[in-house]
Image 1: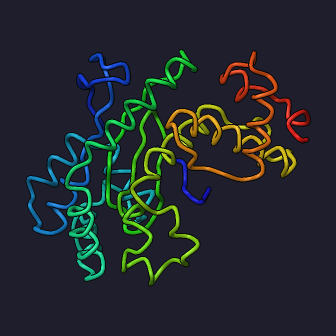
Image 2 (image 1 turned 90 degrees about the horizontal axis):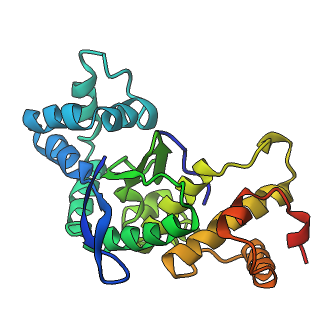
Length: 259
């Protein structure tokens, strides 16, 4: 579940918040649609818009995720286009665009979750969020105030193409309902990393991740993450209602969480 890599678009709009009022909220930017247009039709105008409106996202996809070379290479966009001409990837692009033709539900989930997080973590920056198609690579990419969501990693546990690359155990969380929880988990982990990670015990590392997951469960109002460590955090917080969520995540106290 922690195999995604932390790397480095989105717009703000008026959205009805959880109190029924309108407020400033996040709308996920559909970078994947420009990507799809270029990779299936070779539409040069789509490529130009990718480079103009999403330079960082395009560089990250080509250089860091697909590792096709540097964006300055004069042949890189031909290499990028050629890479996705594989019949499996062409099918993937078409399937992703069909499955995620409408993401209003995801926008609303992000809106509600960040509405709660902004109350619990007043200084937490609101990120820009965009979607992409990354050829079965990282699920969530976080960096420089952005969250990139690879829609191809959330096609549903019964998606036919997954059977070639993943075990049934791996695909249990590879569906639409995990987009927001996963994005929040990696974003909070980037903001509240475990100090001196390399010298920490496995128990401390597991409990730190469990604290992140516990907060995400509360922010999304559903228990996406369940294990013994999350249960320990839950029992600890029930016994200490005076501790704020920010104090919980920032705290270096782990021994008191073990029953």
